[in-house]
Image (cartoon, rainbow, N blue to C red):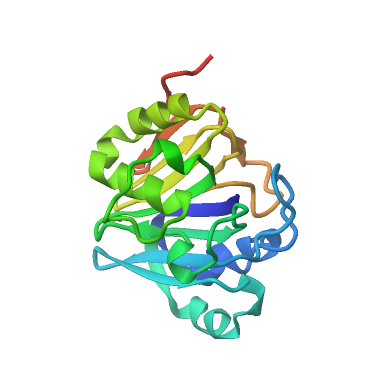
Length: 230
């Protein structure tokens, strides 16, 4: 289980998205408000952003609240596209930096909020870790992000207990799925935030219905029902 966030729009500091809001990912690491499974997200974190089209990442297996180095640098890290997450490890899964989202294939940054039986996922040399989220990311990368909705629906059909909320970005496009967990959207004058839960009490936050694909591109947002939607 995790909490994650994506931003696409005008450049913002990573701190403004992850650390500064009153219910930021930092706060969600120890006191999430909408998390259905688990009480904390203290098993690692990751910040990914695009720098002249190149994905950059900073990942850790430690709690976000204990990283003073990141807190001191995050205000200076600015990007128009950010994917970040805090992690609550599934029982039995390793806790290591490579198990923390975002994962990357060199073009996309991807985070998984949820859980999936590794038995329904193919083994892949592309996976950055043996955790379910890394195997799922490798499958999504191999299939291509154009097929994200179909891939998630197929995995969900193979594991009816799976929770498959995905966030993925390539610098110019932000994609998300809702499959078994919460996702909210905030449309700002200069961009769009997608997050597991609102990072403040702005009434403009909108909840995304379950089993939908969200596409954010060129300032436009499209919601598409996914296969298996009741």
